[in-house]
Image (cartoon, rainbow, N blue to C red; front, side, top):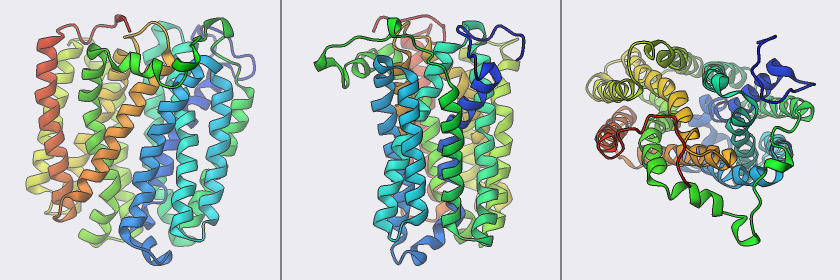
Length: 411
């Protein structure tokens, strides 16, 4: 990236590479914080003298309050600037990770996860906002795709590292590692130069300061309806995150190391995702690509439902196909949605991430409500959400034929 005109405004201390490193680190907080300790989840109930349902709240609660952080801090950054919000979020994340590491009870752990999630939400909300502020338009999707590609390393490395840490030490050690990640990001953030000058910040009345911008974005159907359709992919993805350890360890009878390996294999397959649209855009339109990808994701759900019980290898392969689709559509859909409004990039990014995370939290809850074996529960969840996604996408194309065009709407 050296010598290339990537940035609208120079970053004297970080440069383009340093800024990308910061954005990659902040975007990886979510998968690292969810995936690193999941190898121990089936056994944590015994360690903390509690129930599996209470332990699962550390996953679902984190995901939900991560979304709350996105909702609150994205619009706030449009008024106060990116750097103070980013630094505050990173400090909260680091403190929350420390509290998780020393939590004596499940109640304290859940509370600490909420603090950690709010901080991670603030940091993650800044990722897309800073991309929109800092990168020139023709480089923006490349930056998003690169961040998405590096983001995938989180789910690949986290369960493997987490499994070995859990076996060699215990689940608390994973949170010490997360605290170290928070400290590293904080150091990079201190070197970051504000990407949203005071002259470009949103000025709102006191009544407008909380949710006005957020509501003004979400009330535009041409933005909200495609947002809901695209985020259905995260519904299925996060359902997998919440039950994968139970599938591999309880249903198939594997140990933590084997679970981490299978989890990483499926995550590694998604490395192909961010490149898919870059390649296919040479000979196909975005709407055709998205239509085909939704169909492939539905087929993956059917394969898991009919064949996933046979072996962990088949289960892993069927989910890997779904995960590749999710990874291939995320940068494309994010760029499409970010382009819908000229101003308030923080609010728009917050709306995208908030809805995506809420949809994922709902998927985590739904898969737990299905009273059957873990493989069937996940397969039914993915199949159901992809049926809705395919029907919704076709209806969307009829109502908004130009939905994939990169043009601004009136908020």
